[in-house]
Length: 339
Image (cartoon, rainbow, N blue to C red; front, side, top):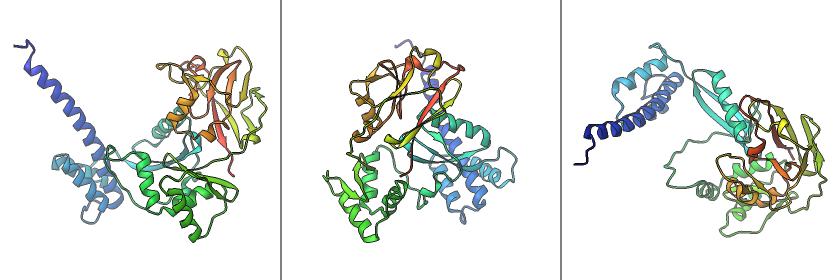
């Protein structure tokens, strides 16, 4: 005999399974309610609702729960009213992001998204700031273990995603080619084993880690600058500007700076510790983990205090300079200029 209670073992296993099931049910109920609100409660005439109901049945959700979710969505049953809201913003490196949400409190969701964007080196944008880059075609899902991001992007490019390349060129301020030239460019960019850069309108394009990127081989001449507390610091040599926002509990603390804060480029061998729970690591390893192309790493402005790194775009603030919770902090942001 093991000496353990068989009922206790069953209780813990059942508790974990019920928690997972409850989480799945909550997500499906929200989707059913939103679908019913938008397209009506008739599953035969509402494709989105039909899909949500089928997904709920696949998870063995009781029919009563499905029916109540539909009635709540159509307003025939009192309860929390959900609405779909799309937010726009920029991720690390200026990547355009559309966040589609279902919420019962728009203000709370805005605050939560703003926190998430700021935490990972991005920022929430104004309405219309990035939506013009997107055009919804379809919604596809597949198990995440079946294919990674790079594999999926390769499939999309090889399928002839002309709009993806055209949108990228527009975002970079580059001249749009003819349809025939666009197709030819895609073939060159997606040819297996292709390592040469593609020239177009003065820019050098290639596919890096499943993304179309613009690679510049021009050497950058940059004289280190001193930050004097400005809210914006334009750096034309690097094609962008640094922005500084006062945020409590985020960014770096000015009280921890023993010397003036300077802006310079990467020199090699620097180490950063953005996560207090992990050891200090080289910028090379951190950049590789974040997917920053080698040619972009040399054109990023770094904030330093003496010889210590304070902040690196896309990676964050070093742990020794991070502002304490609820303490005054300065949150930097590197914004690349269009064109």
